[in-house]
Structure formats: C-alpha cells, structure tokens
Length: 472
Ligand SMILES: *Cc1c(COP(=O)(O)O)cnc(C)c1O
Image (cartoon, rainbow, N blue to C red; front, side, top):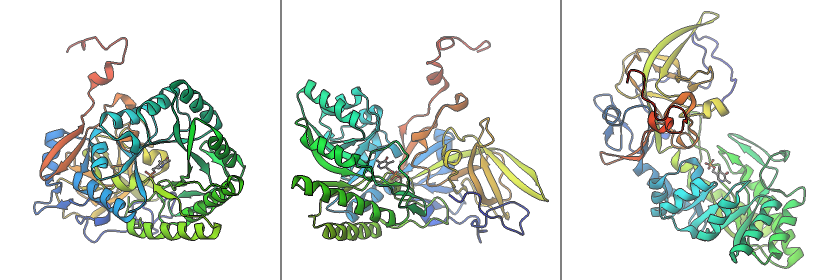
C-alpha cells in the first residue's frame, strides 16, 4: 500500500512519487509476472504458451489466468526452502478442485476455514489428515464434518469452541487434534509491524491477557482433545522476519510457561502465513530461502533461550504461492481524460470488470500494476487509472500506472499478481456474473472454474428465475 503518498511536483497528471516513469512502457518487470509470461515479437503478451489475445477469444473477458508451471514451481520452492517443516497452503487465498490437487501433488498440506473450503478439499480427494481447519466461529456442521472425515488439526479460537468441540467429540465418540490460536500482540502489515499492537480483535486467545495459557490447560486436561501446540498468524503482505521474531519469542515463552506448569513440552508451533509479494515495482519480497533461513534462526535462538527442544514447525503461505501465478485479463471499454483541477488531467481507462472481481483496491487501498496485453505501443507512457464498470466511485482496479498514451477501446489490459484474494473474494455486485478461472500450460487452456452466467444468478430469484425476457 502506498496510500496518500506525495505527488510528483512537476506532473500534469497526479501520480504518487513512488511510481516511476518506465524507460520502455512495453517491458515487463519480471518480479510482477508469473514465470512463463513473455511479450512476443508481435507485441502480444503470452502466458503458458498462450497469447492473451487468443485466450480472450476463447474464454472471453474478464478472466483470471493461472500459470500452472509458476504455481507448481512456487509451491515446490516453498516446500524445499522449508524442508523439515510443514507447509500448509492457505486455501482462502484461492481454492478450487484443481488447485487442491496441485497443492497435494506438490506435497503441500492445506488450510481451510469454512464448510465450503473444506468440502472442496474433500471432494478433490485431499488427504484429510493433511488439512488444518481454521475459523473464529466454526459451526457445528463444520466441526462435525472435520471430525467425521478425520481432519488433521483443528485450530481452536475460543473457549466456546472448546466446549462445542468436546460435546461433538462425545457425541461422535471420537477425539480431536487441536492447536490453540493465540494473539501475540504483534500486528504486521506490509513494510511495518507493531510489536505492541493492542489486542482488540476477534481472533484467538490472548497471551498477554492469560487466556492462551488457560486455553492450553483446558485442552490438555480434556479427555476428548489431543493438544498439539500453538498457532500464531500475525498479518498479511509481510516483507521481513521482524514480526515473526517477536511472535515466536512470545509464543515460545508460552511454551515454557506450559512446561513449567505441566512438565510437558508442546510438540507443534505454527507461525502462520502473510508472506508478501510484489504488486508494484516498489515491493521487494524476500525469497522463500531467505525467509526460511531467517525463521529457522529465530526459532532456534528462541528455543535455546527458553531451554526448549525445537517443536515441529509449520507455516501457512497463501498469497505467496498463488498470488504471483495469476493475472486478471480485461478489455477496455472507454478511455476518458478527466480534468482534476490545478491544470492536471487524469486518464480513466474503464474495463469490463472491477470491484466485483477484485475488491482489494477498494477494501484495503491495495496497489496493483497493469500492462497493455494485446499489442506493444510506441506511444508515450501516460499515468492512467484503470477502473471498473460498477456504480461506485471507489471501483478502482489499478490506482496509478504508466500505460501507453494510445490505449483504446478493445485493447486488453493484464493485471499481474491477481491470483490471490481476487476470485476468492469476488462478488456479484450489480448482478455481475463472476469471471472464469483458467489455467494455462504448454499452450493449453483448461477451465478451473467456469464463468458464471446470468442464469446462474437469476436461478436464485424467486420471482424471475422462470420468466422469459419480455422480448426474448
Ligand atoms: C489468511 C491466513 C493465512 C494466509 O495468509 P497469506 O497472506 O495469504 O499468506 C494463513 N493463516 C491464517 C490463519 C490466515 O488467516
């Protein structure tokens, strides 16, 4: 995020200072794009061996495109870098049957946090023993399914949930493997973290308030619960290990308090997800290897400090695996120069998607990049704002980006790093059917999630689902 940054003083278009004018507006910055993305001789961007112009013909726009080779190699890199630890892919970032299968094939475990996500994983044949179940208000139906199918761990979030789980276990005459989600007081976001964040939020048991230790004792003494350890998740879009260091110290101190009281060492620690990716040229995420080295040092150091054996560690990257693998493809519908005062103009490029397929800019002021995908251009780069078609002023997809000055109706715009939290957070605002998600590899396009149709949406409407259009 680069919210409310200073503006270029000399510009005729208002643009934040961090946004630098590209030497070549056609060049693609490698860290923003998935592995197989290239701009061909003819100027058209390709991914997975498919020209985006051909892909748009085939599946229409808007569409999400996932680079299978990139997803698999990223999953592989995380697993290799953290060998000896367990890597859970955070399904909430993007989950469908194909992605569940890919994650399994790449040796990842899987986190889910709803009945829907759990059902997708189970139907995809994902080994339940390798699934972690999250959520601060899990329903009885969710917990029941998790128990019946033998989900590997349930991350409990409240004492009410402990009671609910114990009752269900008694009813089903089974036991549950649980971790306690704790609040460490560390709040990490983008380039900064706050180590003494106040704990006024809904997740977990507070360490500082003492509830975490009470929750651990309760699970430890429950005949129905098998206590595995502690879970901490400190935020999202995190670029360094400072926040994890403080969180690890506070959670391992809790381990040592538990040991003092019971004589036992907890077996598992989960450090959560939140590893950042590059959405703009400004973002410089660490590699999985750098993060792994940092996190291993931290855990080793803190365990030594508290005289603990190193527990089994797990992490839960979501965005860092699927985010860079995906791009969103849109078609330009209108281009409008707008006089914004002080002699400045802003160029609004409206595309055929918007906040219904990517809510993050509206929700978090998240920044994205964009490129003209259907051709290269010799025109001068112009600061542009890519906006959607929804009835909201805040319906922005890319707040500020240099795009060629001749972008016109019918051009394709590609937005990189759109694999995570775009389709998974998509809505039907304005009765907009959600775009499809396709995977590309070796010149082949495969549908992972088909495009929604108006009939899909209207099927829910009690009055009009059966009606014909007046002149239809
Ligand atoms: C959201 C979430 C993750 C994944 O976060 P990313 O930013 O996608 O890595 C992991 N664990 C928990 C508990 C989460 O809530």
